[in-house]
Image 1: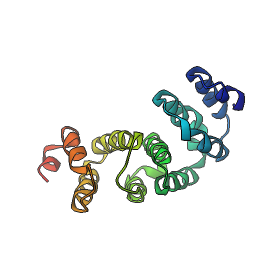
Image 2 (image 1 turned 120 degrees about the horizontal axis):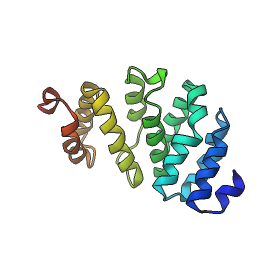
Image 3 (image 1 turned 30 degrees about the vertical axis):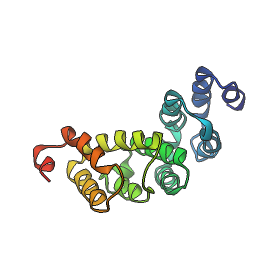
Length: 169
């Protein structure tokens, strides 16, 4: 995986993600974490989350979620983006079935969210709005009440994904 990643081409980094998918434990996160700092390719980030983390996410459960919570609590925006994308990919995990743990993890995210993390947050909230509109609305209203920068615009962009009863709130 090292040799493939170090070539710095999208294709070889995607192949590195396939190699890493063979690891079914937290070592994949430890390997990826220092390498995402300079990562500006959304396609590679998607491969990291969808492919490299696949077996780890499937086998680790709570350990996967705990790592996401650490990423979201980090001071580094790139780790926020990684954590948000990993959280979205993990929404089908039994540990996140009731969505409560997902919203708890989001509560640890420093504000304001910057860079790709802002896009990752918007994508995650769009998915959450479809799966759990009441909890998403509650989360957004709390963020608006806390006067978080940019949250009103984000909430307005999500209105179409919410049922009419939630839109009115």
